[in-house]
Image 1 (tube, protein in one colour):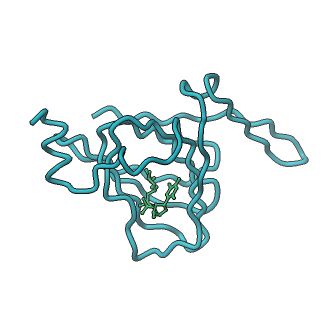
Image 2 (cartoon, rainbow, N blue to C red; image 1 turned 90 degrees about the vertical axis):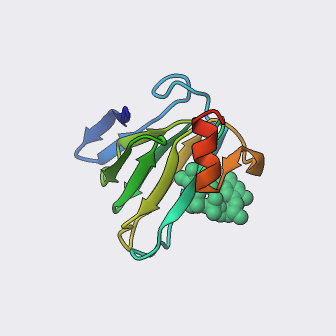
Length: 133
Ligand code: T46
């Protein structure tokens, strides 16, 4: 499975750092939705689903967390602990987020508005979906 991470460039000076991300520029898709997770617990996992069409970049803009990616054949985990690094999660990838630091803020840039129809929340249904059953 190909893991796609992107380092976004920062405008850094003695005043600090500024990272800007434009849809269809720094990332390929237009950004239609931004959401973020915070107040998270180290012991809890979130996610446990895949999307049918949605494309997303996950950026841990504060603290750290890990993300498990599963394409139905392989699994890999990626630690996110830099505010200028995004992890691409495309359609058909089961993902789980875990090992959140207490202060973690996970920002997500999404290619579309929220639609529960786009979720596959059952792992067996996910395997059927990616295996074309
Ligand atoms: C994803 C990972 C990275 C909304 O009403 N609007 C929204 O835009 C979102 C994202 C969620 N919700 C509602 C749906 C649920 O009732 O918020 C509740 C919690 O969502 P969920 O349990 O899906 O949260 P996570 O952390 O498991 O997953 C989220 C995103 O839903 C998902 O698309 O890829 O973060």
